[in-house]
Image 1 (tube, helix red, strand yellow):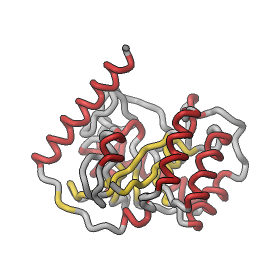
Image 2 (cartoon, rainbow, N blue to C red; image 1 turned 90 degrees about the vertical axis):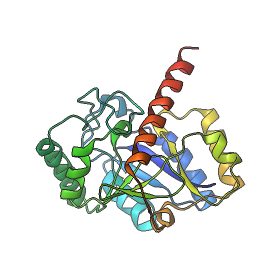
Image 3 (cartoon, one colour; image 1 turned 60 degrees about the vertical axis):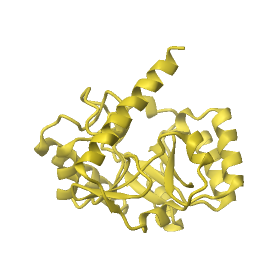
Length: 246
């Protein structure tokens, strides 16, 4: 498979050393990733380094360079224990909240980004968790694309176009097709082993610039396909929990 790269939890106070390491590998391989920028981060777990005062101008420079920007929630604070339509986790900033509340939150995030000169129609849900109200709220605020879901191509569902992430990295690496997928990186928690994995991956090639991923024609996702995806996410969550207990 051709592999696109997504990096989550981009904030002024993130772990800049780890981010710099993965950015260096991306630059060396001439790979343009997707980054999820939190408009107004209030998650204490993401407050690692002193906040960069030039953060927003730096993000804008990355976007001008060809990096793709997604709005990664609003505060990155989990307010519910609902995994939503894609239940990889048991928590969400959005799922289960009323439509009007979600619409207001998404509007606020979009306004914050615009105030810093950052414009995007791509959304990245914290903890991958969203529900039907989230999709309606996104569309009402001009968002038309999301990074999440499972599948072998981008797909359209409920008016939104989804760009799938990988279900199993090992299987993706064995797959010799030209189908696209996304590997998700959390720079703040990245280990030296993970960094080594990505160093080897980027040198191997067969990567996909995220902006090229966005240019692919989506297929239609049926209700049956959405239900299957829901079950896949549940099974992945269960597997991760079992492995964590070993």
